[in-house]
Amino acid sequence: MAVYRFRISFEDFDEVVREIDIKSTQTFEDLHKAVHRSTGYSAEKSSSFYVSSDHWIKGDEIAYLPNQRKIDRGVALMENAKLSKFIEDPHQKFYYIYNFDRPFDFHVELIKIILTTDPNIEYPVLFKSIGEAPKIFDSTNGAAAAIAATAATPASSDFDFLNEMDFVPEDSEEIEAMDGRGITTSEKSDDADEEEDEDNDDFAEGDDFGDEEFDSKEDY
Image (cartoon, rainbow, N blue to C red; front, side, top):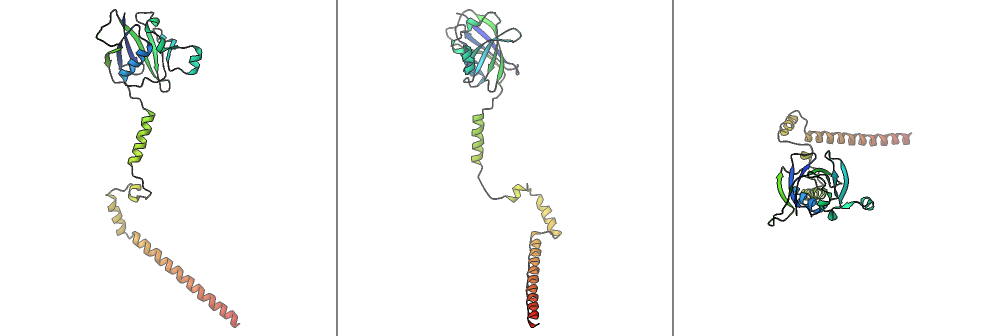
């Protein structure tokens, strides 16, 4: 039984490389899951391998968790597709798309065929790892983090004047300077009280005037 060594690299991050040894009788599902044990991504995402030309032109598809349209079309399934049935070249290439919802594209190339298996190794096995796989934002975790952040912030309906106005301690000097120019809150309040008193006096005088006018008409 032969062992295939595949070199897997991100199409857009070619400095990130994995090399995986896998038995020729194992399936594309085994390879798919082995790849993501090495990247740290969830393997339970709709993904596909495509038999590829030397120029990475996609041919026949081998799918994992395919949609209904692909199933109706009779797409090959990873769990049933043995690697050996799709190897036609000692440097066979496959174009691989992981997670169609938020896809990452990979180049998968057969770089070595080992004629015997090692009885002490459980295949598939990671032979070489270069670079760190790019991070994937998980919307579920992101939502959980946002909820946690909201819960950690105490709710308050009070208006925090200093915080809302971006107050810093240095601003106190400007406030004191305003006091020196007679622009204080207390003086504004006093002015408002004086205006109110004047308005009340005007109303009082108006009332007296009204009475006098009425009396004069009555006398007349």
